[in-house]
Length: 171
Image 1 (spheres, helix red, strand yellow):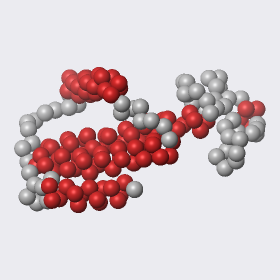
Image 2: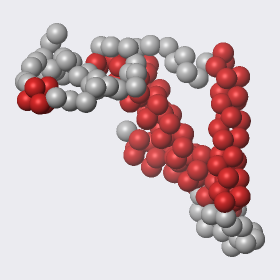
Image 3: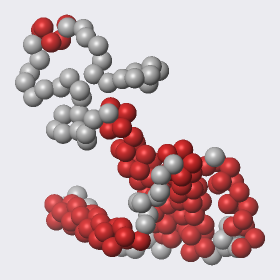
Image 4: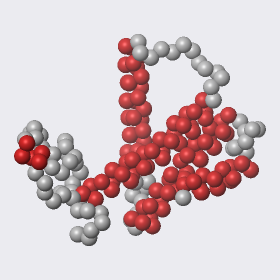
């Protein structure tokens, strides 16, 4: 579905002037971001509304202030990491690279890919994991039979029924 959406969106963006040889650098960056983000968002909307049959609460207006706060918090954490690397001498800035296609790199590879990755990892996988295990979110050890004590030979060789239901069998 996302492949079809990407191809269709590229055909829509070409007449607008965002894709092609005569498009500006910023227009190509915006097009790259849209080509990566929009199919992922539409696929997530289809998953939530048609398959899970629930309202899309993650993108409601009530969550926008928290989302902006998390955005600035994440940017601050990235600044701390890069600043620490710079202070340690592991990150060196020699000067601006004027030949680089910065809007395409930042918008396309950065923002567009990040939106798709976050929707897949946090939106789908993290939410479906506890539901499949039919348990609360994992604590320090996420495996069902895991304990903080070191394993003994009897616990390593013991065979028992799995702690989670099989996906092929009705429970």
